[in-house]
Length: 493
View: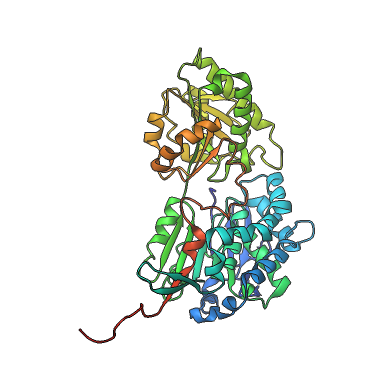
């Protein structure tokens, strides 16, 4: 989100809002640093004043987390989730009011997330399913016995790690997901709240403090904020011996900045920027019923949360091989997609509060030159940009606010050649085409393949890999207890 974030000692505090830190079950309110986010000014504590309290100096300090069961942890998270409803939670109300002023998401979309969706991340059945599938209860609950091929008995257990989480702010759900992941892996977490949403994680952790400030999960998670690049803070919170891992979401510049701290003792789990696409077969344009369903599905994948997520479709390739009057068919389909986007439920998608400056400039040029051809665009309502040369626009990474690039192609060989690990989700229609292309898509670099419309159903994805990574497994430290192999002689040869 294009925004400015500044950090300075406060001189005049009358016009700013106070936002605390939450540190290991305590709410810190020594407000002394002012930050600016768009037109919003808010005060927070200074992270550099609390570095010794923020870090866990020894991993043995996590013993309390490993003495309770995973079911105890999941029950606690479920209780927390039952309190995460906007109507009754004053911390969420405060975070929501501030986010409305700062977020690229519209008020109605934000409200639906705060009212209903945040709590779904804490559903006990979904959390247990994620633990069982991605970690295995045996290894997360205790020492899991195994026998090696040469007959040795070993025991493996997943232990928590000290992790700094650099989270994304494009959706409040990222903070909720991070909190759950940390709890079930029994980690000690420092959450660096993002510049475009420094409020959600703090609101959830304040609710956790109200629930039980002394619970091991509460005592092993903090949410703090500092301006990226603050050397005083980052040489402690990104470096050994204070932490074991960094989980970083964000843009290219942010990931590169964090990566410079990686070295012996510090592992980076990078959830870097992704661009999702769609692939539509030729029947999309030749059969009216198919076209109508495809347009609705594509509109959902574009419009979800105003296209702020990596899962959102930004480029859609449609096969025109054998399609009569293909140009007219493509234009008709583009108008249908645009119309369907406008009819999405308001809690799901709305016209954007504002267009990012770079995108606005590109759209203005396209409207004047008709390159790319603009369908329904030029406003905050979104639009479909048609490129007739078989290539996406060169500003695909800046397609937000419900703008889709529709690219007619003849077959998908050239499309597959252009796919890379930058492409996260690929929605394919019809479903038989997904099964035909999925191996080639996976080899090309796509990390998630769904039937068109499935990106919008992404929801709470904790039980599946993300960006080609088993995040929960990598967040753990996998420790082996190994005895002597059978019939081993200790005599020196």
